[in-house]
Length: 217
Image 1 (cartoon, rainbow, N blue to C red):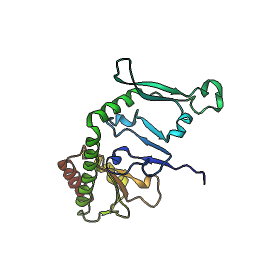
Image 2 (cartoon, rainbow, N blue to C red):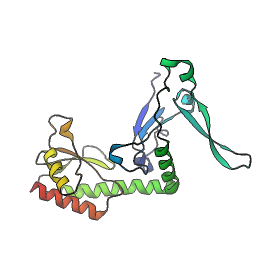
Image 3 (tube, rainbow, N blue to C red):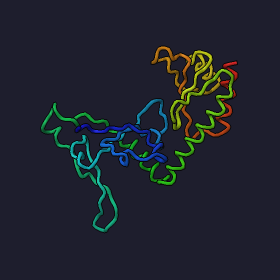
Image 4 (cartoon, rainbow, N blue to C red):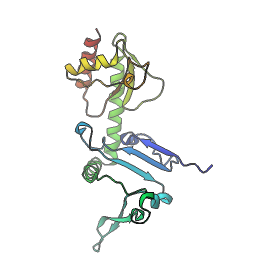
């Protein structure tokens, strides 16, 4: 009793899934790169953190709220700033912050442009294209698609060869084939984590599958 439920989410998937708030989560965190930010060779990106209303005053940084100006127009202002960094010093939770305002602005514009319906469509595209990729990959001799649990746009395949070696050969063909799990998990040297997003076309997926089949032949 008394424990808080903390959930880490992939934001695009929430276009289809029930939100963590609806499932009773107290704190939700995630990475916002998929919300309109390019890969940028690994950064900068933005993270997000949401909490139930009763925990808002315990959040670090600044809280932006919605209000109206003198002419009744909707606007946004800083409504709360954690002042503890000025008082509690080394015991503060908010005295070290990174400024990713430009990334946050980019993500905000992206979400404003696609809207609620667009996010749902984007999520469906991720799911459908990943499922199409699965169906194509498991037709390659020696390739096994792991289906032990539901997936969104990332899934694991088992190759007949060392995944790191395969990834290197695929790079030569112009494809970032996936992440070789053996790099961090001993005994999984033939496992490859594959991601398929809304940006990939059917032709992209078909070309990737053909190249992988050639490398594995």
